[in-house]
Image (cartoon, rainbow, N blue to C red; front, side, top):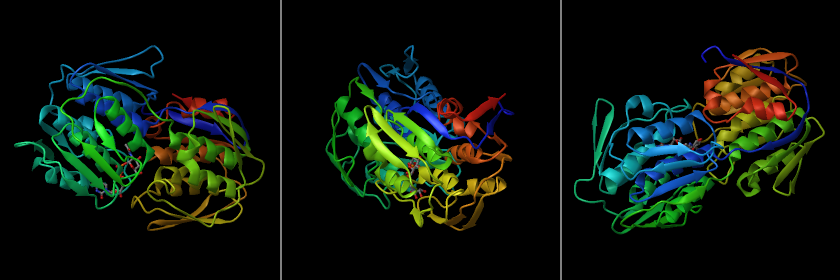
Length: 423
Ligand code: UD1
């Protein structure tokens, strides 16, 4: 609801257990891939309950797929046998960045697709030139008319080697979707190496595709002629896990995380340890203990995987607002991803932003104020700011947060935070 907000009374230590949701950034491409299945149904387990997942399902249904969830609400069944649509309306494309993957999936299934430019969080310019350049090279004709991209495959796809100008996650996934069904071998060079891409490869291979190399910077796709139904479980959400870990590192306490893959968060765990946290693996998860004020870390620079993820930058920035010392954040993936800094300053943080660099001078404490989420991960950073701050913090703009967190209020509440949603 438009006027809903999150209210947090901060300055409590966090203790308890949280089960990490399935990864949004894996569930969305996997659900999109289900459209490409000519025979049978796909079952995607571990889907988080999110507005982005609902929107993806709505697009699939509008394209003629039959979709349903099991009782848990976490397993999506998608039957694309009778899919017929070629078009995603701009209003749906606008809702999330990952909608751009429908370009590859619809083209693969129907041979033509009409989509507009995708929406998603405003983090600066987010062009799709790398997607379009690769698609053209692979035999797709693209004509733009009033913001709508009309894509078609005039004769047939032309598998070949494509080198990406930068390792774009979305472009790598889009090419995998487009070329899984084709006649020949496609090689993606300078591919993104994010673990969500390994998930997509594994799902597509379970559907009958022949793809290898995901997780490295060279992916080889040997085209197949058809894809069948498959069952797949998405990986744990590494950014959601890092949100709870950053929260506990900032507030102190001890939290246990279930459903977490420690390999996916190795760099961030090293940063958390430098901050003073103790992290140990336990059966089925990990435990983070923080007994001291966080220590600043000299520089945190966002990079492609396996470097420090840009999506974790905002929540770590919140934690560093009360660190002992100064931390410099360098954002090298997106050119406008510091909107949360000004909001954190409203809580008394001391952050200076200069272009792609933010200098955070740690304060002893923050105090509650009215603040706003402007994007998904910036919104999670606001919640952590509220948990740190003395007094009451009210966070508006929570629809941004709902795009990526199943229930951040429930989860931080389970960890002992005094947090609720006011409708
Ligand atoms: C994905 C993630 C997002 C994450 C990002 C970087 C999903 C749904 N979203 O987004 O959460 O923050 O990876 O890890 O998985 N670029 C171009 N031209 C293109 C494509 C990208 O210049 O055609 C640039 C972007 O502007 C950005 C950089 O490449 O500066 C990385 O973007 P990309 O990896 O494509 O991110 P997304 O797939 O949009």
